[in-house]
Length: 201
Image (cartoon, rainbow, N blue to C red; front, top):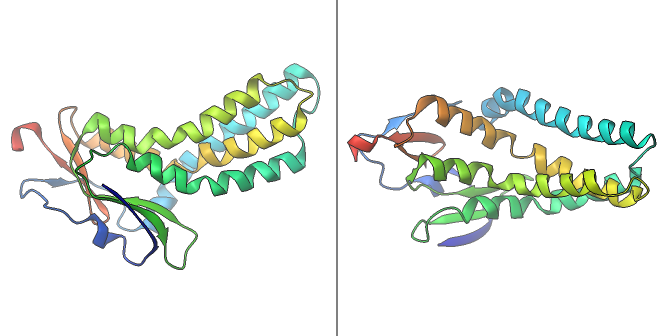
């Protein structure tokens, strides 16, 4: 079940369910600020991919392929799509899971919050599904004619937000892949990630 709350005051409260006694906490950053700092190299790598795509297309077409105003408009559209980013996280959870999507009160921060164990592959899908908001416009940017500079700019701007905004989710994915097994179940509890081994259910 998905609910919407545009004035979330405490994210941890919305990520508390029945945590199994034998669940094991993964080694993750203790605060959101620390997570963002540790995940910054991922954001840098994703930015590099975006600029490489732009320069490659410009080089192959031997002309400027984007319009600056189009990029600005694309960035704005990308920001407006951030709630959709959180909705894409939410739809991966089973119907019986309680998922809250919304905005943190006083911050320009949208979240999808749930505390429900899922098999590792599904948890990773939940983390990475929002990349479609970057991949789709990036593909359109790459295949559209060089002369369509305004369209290219808009698609590049949308793709920039869509490709870079999941960088903390990519960090969480790496943590889960490194610290859990394929048959484990994974869940958030408060601000942490836990694993439940297949033999520990």
